[in-house]
Length: 462
Image (cartoon, rainbow, N blue to C red; front, side, top):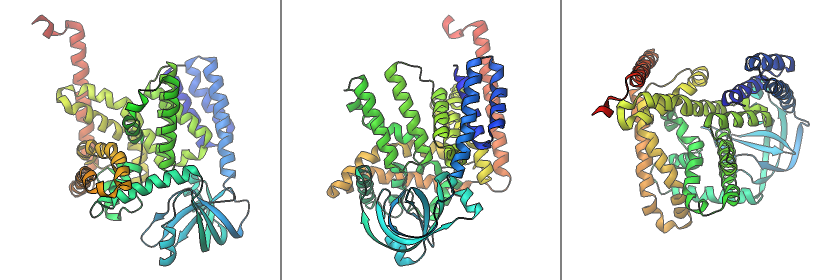
C-alpha cells in the first residue's frame, strides 16, 4: 500500500471514530478509497472504519459510571495533581473507573499536592455524576464522574514502574530547586513535561508567543533520550537493540504520564525502530499515519484530545511542508531549514489552534527560531544532568549552571514575544504577508529548478 493510501486510511478511520455511526463510516470509507481502484484498500478501509465507529460508541458508553455513592478504600492516582489558583485537581482510578477530585481547602490541597501518579491512596468520599458539558470536556481522559473527598490517610508507593518513575521525577525536582525564581518549573517542563508549578504569568506568555509546545513532551524529547543512550545502543546487536530501544521509549512515555503527545511520539519512535530492525521502509508520513491509525482504534477518545491533534498536526507540517519550504528557502543558507520547519509546524496546527484558541501568534516564527534550539539543548542536557544533580546535591550548582542559562534564555524569548505580539487583526495581516512571501519564494524556487533542468547547471561550465 502506498504512503498516500495509508494516510487516507488513517484519516478515514479518525473521522469514522469521530462520527461514531457505522453506516456513515462505511460510506465515507468507500467514497474515499474507491478512486484508488484497489479492492484490498477499499475492503480494509470499510472494515477499519466500521470497527472504529463501533469502538467509538463503546468508548462513550464506557464513560457511564457503574456505581455512584459513598466509597471508602484504596484508589490509584492516574496522574500528578494539577494545581490551580484556588484548587487542585487529581484523577483517581476507583475500581477500574476514573474520577476527578477537586481539593479546595488549603490543608487538603497541601496534602494532595504531595501525591504522585501511580501511588495508591486510602480515601473516603462520594462518587457523583458529571454534568453533560463537563463530561464532554474530560472524556478524552476517560473520567466518568467526580469524587468528593472527605479524608485521605495512608499512601502506598505503587508498583515497580510507578516507584521508578517517581524516583526519577523527584530527582529532577530536587535538581530544579537549585534554579532561581520560576526557572526550576520551566526546567521540569522542558525535560519531563512537568508544568504543575509554572505560574499563570509564565503560561500566558508562552501561549502568547507560540512557545507553549516546548513544555509539552513530544517527539523531540524522545529523540533526545534515544540520542543520549546512543553510545550504548550502538554496541548492541540488531534485535537486542530493538528491545532496549522500545523499552527506553516505553519507560519515557510512562515517566511523562502517558500524555497524548508523548504517546503519539513514542508510538512513532517504536514503529521507526521496528522498521529499521526489519529493513522496512521508514517514510515519516507513513509511520505517522500508522501511529494515528493504531492509536485511535485502541483509544477512540483520543480523537477528542486537542493535545493529540496539535501533536499530529505539528508533526505532519514538520515532515511534509517543512522540508519542502526549506528547500525553496535555500538562499537563506543556514536559516533555511529552521525557518522551513517552523513554518511547516505552524501550517500543521493552524486549524486546531484557530478553532480552539482563536489566535495564531505572529511572533511565534522568530520566537521559535530563537528558543527551540536552546530549549532542545536543555532537553538533551537536562535529563542526565538533572538526575546526577538530584542524586548528588553537591554537584548541582555546577551541573545545573548550563540549564539555568538555557531556561533563562527561553523564558526571556517568551517574555519579549508576549510584549511584541501585535493585537487586533494585525496578526492575521502578518500571517497573510508571510503566506504571500512564502508562495513567492516557492514559485521562484520551482521556476529556478525548471530552468536548471532545461539548461543545466551553469556552474558546471566554469
